[in-house]
Image (cartoon, rainbow over all chains, first blue to last red; front, side, top):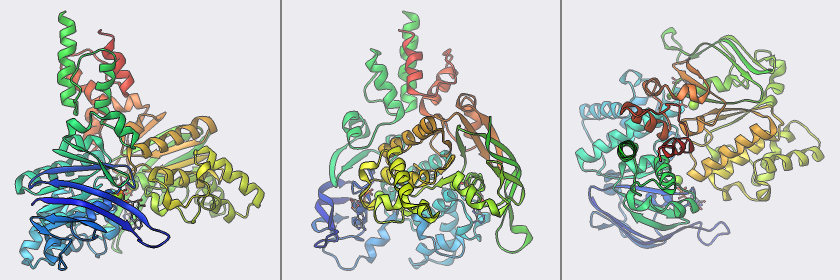
Length: 285
Length: 281
Ligand SMILES: Nc1ncnc2c1ncn2[C@@H]1O[C@H](COP(=O)(O)OP(=O)(O)OP(=O)(O)O)[C@@H](O)[C@H]1O
Ligand SMILES: Nc1ncnc2c1ncn2[C@@H]1O[C@H](COP(=O)(O)OP(=O)(O)O)[C@@H](O)[C@H]1O
Ligand SMILES: [Mg+2]
Ligand SMILES: [Mg+2]
């Protein structure tokens, strides 16, 4: 499913002393089956923006078209909400059922599925996020921070949305959990052709996963492009509170020291390849 | 050197539910000494027991078996509770639910006020704490006007106003953007170096753990590794097996070594890697 965001602005508490402009004339297009990353400093408008994509917030001006339908004009958003699944920031605050199983089953139960299908979806989702099926009858409140986060992510995956949006899903996850869940999300993205949007503060994860990055700054879109294009703008990204992956910093320092390497390296494996070539070249010279 | 925190055969069991089978051993006979003035990082997979351990360091939890001493005071002795909480302050993950007041300086004053400290001294402590985290000029702001990193620094200032000898931070940067993370880490490094405050930092960011004097790796309620960052992070394979990771440059060094390059495996920072590669120029 595709998404077109056309000139949207959004103001919280309009007309009160607490008025705050969170989005200013934001436009972009996300094509069907893209994997898009959104980065930006805290308060730049990322969470506000994604809440517009399933109609939870209505723009003060502008429109949003999801799969050809103008959702800003529509009153009944039930269908859209089934198609656009959002894992919210701090999702563990939304856990409320008595058992982990029931919490993850909550979404699919509202889709009118059979009990067997619901069970299958809950188990699949638990597997994807790395939770042992054995703990399904435990209370989510007896889990560690990172374990709760996994339950919350499973709750949205079990709905199998057509557009999957994740708002900083890996905050608080251990490195292995983070890598595994992101790898699984990438797999699901490829297998089910789900349009996927990932909001993250991890430049490393964004560099590895997405095909397009939207950079937000003070409620506006500041840059859009492929990771290679965007992460070349080191100074600009730092000015607005962001950065680039550690490995990209390394390559930049090496280039400053006169070592010839491509200027758009984003992963450890790419760096390894070129640095090996360099070191072996020096050896043979 | 003085031990600010000592855990002796510390075991902790959560009693989930009422039946015997649901008992869960979360800390499994740990022995840990923490020297005063050090910067110690604790890493470990989700559920390995880090937060549970940290909560023992300021008597939010009491051992099921064994003992924990803070500055020599046994946490089981309830008459020391307030002394212990003042000695070892805690900062948590979420910047949004730690600040209570509507103005920054009131928030920082909240702890000392509750101790019944006189207003003049409170003023001094608040100013000192706000300067220590570089937030003095925001003293009259409303917390909700601040960025995540700034809010975390105010939460740290609130702890500093209690004059602690030790600050325990449980994933203080997990929800911050890169700039906010840098601000918070710089702040705690400064408090450690300039004010001699012992720092215990729980984190899932390996680049942060690298900055500590000592890294403790938890695994299922036990200590799997304990040493300097160089000692710990050269165990790349073991860390990965424990659900952890190493900084990207350390991983690069490890991979170059596998390709037959003669490179030290204890490279932890961009600068160290740049120095290594440039010597071949
Ligand atoms: N209130 C509780 N009741 C029962 N069990 C709990 C409770 N809190 C935590 N546990 C269990 O204790 C174990 C250790 O939890 P702890 O919160 O110390 O982990 P952690 O290392 O801090 O993990 P994370 O990286 O996810 O924050 C976990 O397996 C968790 O399920
Ligand atoms: N519920 C709200 N009421 C008022 N202002 C809000 C609310 N949520 C967010 N804001 C403001 O909107 C701006 C964008 O916030 P947000 O979308 O949460 O940013 P991000 O997700 O990028 O951190 C910020 O200035 C923030 O203070
Ligand atoms: Mg947000
Ligand atoms: Mg924890």
